[in-house]
Length: 470
Image (cartoon, rainbow, N blue to C red; front, side, top):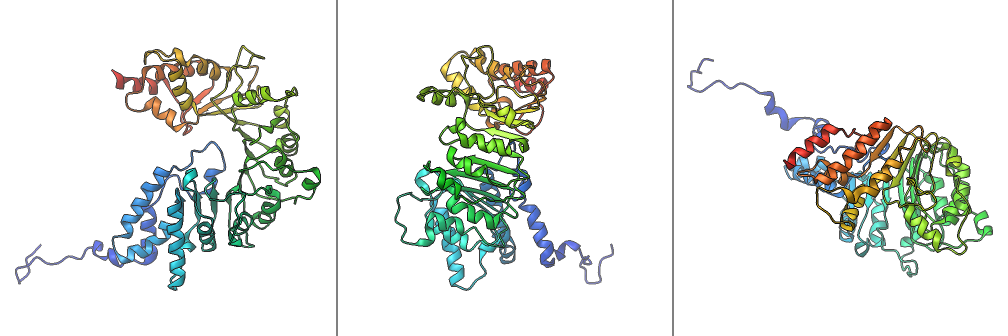
């Protein structure tokens, strides 16, 4: 490099100096990568299986902090990031819903473009004492025409005996606000706050949103009492592309849903709100759709069902042939909270309704972390003594009985907390001993043991975790 005649170093142009003048499309791509979350919370295909771990609120808050910081860099970046700030909204308390509704209303009054146009996923999950006001949620829905995922997990402050001054905020109108001929909804989780059962105000809405709906979750805050004549008048809904159905409903409503047309249904999760597994509605549903089911989750643990059945007068005596209703079942999800059954004291079935299945290849177990903690408290001992976990060892070992599940190839611990207890900093020796026993028995049966991510658990992993205690 030769010095300039003016005594200054000659200026060399760098492409980096052009970055502030990149086209808007390029900046959007850059900011998209900078704010990307893994797994993508807007990818509907990731949520169709009940085996996948959902996004947690802490992960959402971390992502939102990154987006907020980027939006404060400049006015241009603030304008670009708006799309990513609003694409996924997680409401965890009533004040957040009110703030969002106020923002959307203010933008409308000021004649500004609505931020609601960017909302593609709305997730509402609040404590019971911090539920959202109905008028706030209705306002958000009115200004969010491009919703793809809508989830209400008992987060709206609707009471069954409330006098609705604003008819737009009744339970029926709240549901109908989601319905439109051009609806893009693909994932829908709804809570019924009305005394009227779902078929009355849910079925008409589903008829308008059914074209793209792939995931449907329904739960109810009450158990309606319906007559056979009332059920006969319920609409038959056709859901042509629905793949996953999660139900926390009463036995009566199950009978209505049994009539629905769901040709592509593969995954079903059931929590009976009235323990009506022995009722006709439960039987009608699985008789109609059981042959299509590939993955099944039963939410109630065996111990709760046994206690409920023992309290009934007269006690139910019929055996529920779930394995016959679901002959093509390959994946089953149950809870770790099972107990000894005096009718078969030599082993513990994963669930009282599914003691055996000839074609089952996969069993996922939830709440192992809770079971380990509860057993440790119930049977206090030295942290190196794993005797407290003997019942759980026998329960998991029962899954390996060849006569019950001859096709079994995978057992998965679906608990993220259990994974942390196993490989986190300084895991307890008794926890590692417990998993070593499970791993040994799985090896004898040639069954893979997996963590919540679907990654194999190996003896090397346990030994590596044990080094932290040495």
